[in-house]
Length: 329
View (cartoon, rainbow, N blue to C red):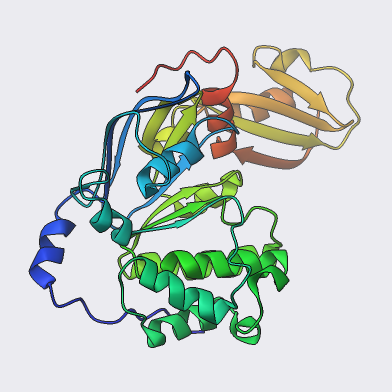
């Protein structure tokens, strides 16, 4: 399938141009409580137009509540949220029209077919139904054979595809995806990400939450990590990965080993895995040759070697584990 082609800019071009100079999303001091329990605690972050931005965190961190405040599903307790310069409270009609949300929970229009529901959802935002755009969504998300089915007759994967189409039917400038690939197979996950990246290349800003950290590492330029209602990190992906000052070095030797050779006891931490493997954590600027010299001096023969830089998963655990020393941003 070819790349996505979005129709031309709307007639109010200069208005759109002015909006494009604003942040796609600005959250300043946003709080939210339920029954006296504060679940979002004065968070601050912003997203530039055209970004794919990751908002990560464990269950209960406050991510979905934050998304609900952006999309107008939940009232803001205090603070402010702006979408392309428009306040989500004072200018709610504009901000909702500019925002498309795929919620984590599967929500269906059980009385309607896919074709009927997409037509209705365009009207919810006061946007004329664009049949060419709808057909493009249906084609790229492989919904064509199912468009006359009621939405509750769809498989789990098709329901997810339909929800992406529903979030995009009014051609929003900001697309929010809350766990878009939860519970779907690898093939569908790849199909969805190919499509989402095409949408982004054509100018749509994307805010993503996911528990598949490899997905976030692959597609996001900047990432915020949320924990217990607070933003505990917000950096470019590369800068987050650099917060780890060590890399892993794994060496497999030909002979069976049970103890760390004396020449290698100065490297910490270290461990034996299996019967032939040694693992070390080295400073990022430390050469593996130092360890290899120690192995050679111990009379061991190396059969395999690999280095592994810190992953987003390790960064995520560091910022969200109990007792973390990270400070609120």
